[in-house]
Image (cartoon, rainbow, N blue to C red; front, side, top):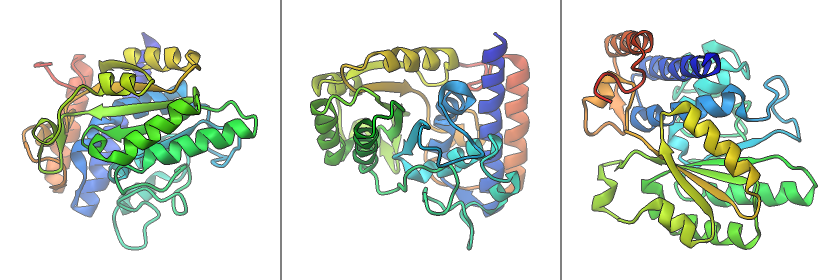
Length: 283
């Protein structure tokens, strides 16, 4: 229970620091950043093999944030783990920053792959996994995709290659928040991501996207199934945990004022104290 409490605190802090950093810029990709906060907390809260003081440690686990526009959430996690000073978060999305709107491995300590053009991240993750295997390194490679991103054909080309190559140390997450930039994913394409990945020969499961212990359990199970790559579909809600984003249907990218941020942070702390974090009483 204490471990789960620590992860809940970390996911809350990731949300808080993400909201505050986007408020400093005045805008940003809030919706999807919120819906990946919990999986980032599990990964950086103890699941990944990392050395924050040695970001390029060759034997580390890797993370490719394929939905690179949600970099602000990853930056918050990295800062909280000590990859760079916390005050860097005040510069997200701003001129001269080391924390650009979309992830750039040449600018940000702890970012393993430059991402942002949707559909390319799984190919990069598969390449990293293959390269590690050729070097005899047993590190895992994690990749976070958006559910709208699955409409990109390159995702499935990468899925085919990863299965053919038996990249059992590759674990993909799908942020199934059911929304994309300007509407519902279901209005653009259908099908169950779990069934799709299974059809491509992957091990695939679905879990509640804010169930910290459930996510951790599925990662550990996937890490033992090395016969094929694994996909963990995170069923979540876009904007979850940030009250002003939850109230706005079109929350992919929003203007964010300091007043909105302060109120959202207070609500996160209230929900955490009440034991209803992140989704609130109606979850």
